[in-house]
Image 1: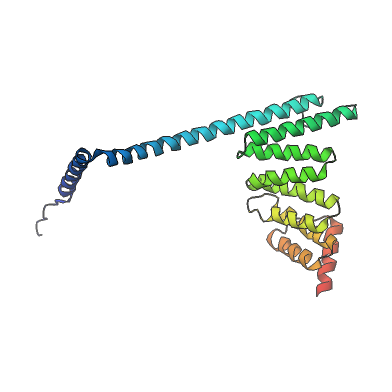
Image 2: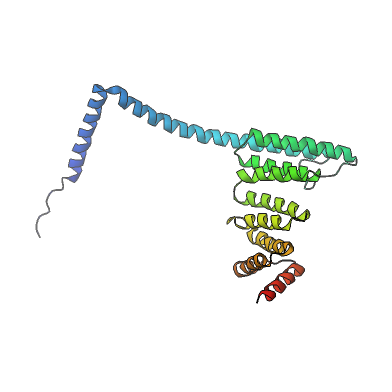
Length: 244
């Protein structure tokens, strides 16, 4: 067997590293300002990244605390405790109205103070609900739209469904169908097929049989376990039969 030739790769690499180090030292000595500026920029970038991460974490914690403060304050003002699952209704309707108006503004302030955090979107979801309970329907929807614009994933889907429900209650079935469909297109939204089925039902109510049938077929194909109320499912089957 022929003898293996000595492997000089490691030694050669070490020599190159040493030469590179020498060149860096000479470069710094001959013209230190540009090199030092580059190194300073790298250090600042690393520090900034760490600072931004810490800052974001701090902002998120502050936002959660602010949101929780408003939530518990609202429950207390309505006569409930911090762990109440349902909000009690004060005996005096004017008291209830005053509290809802006050806390809608407080939630909106949380969203303003902590813009860009998930808590801001949650605050706008709650503020919109209080506006809805006050009968301020347009204000509620506008508040929810602002919340949806900055929300991620499932929370955006929840907000879209709230908007669609209000449109549906007002008899704006085509608008409701469109917003339900927006919720259905959020891939990570757990209720996406329920929202798609609602969109199909609302298209049927709006008189758009083609849209209604197309969405209903998609629900049946992609999520056969999703069910509409019997009367709605029966109507969609009738519309499908009429198209054959």
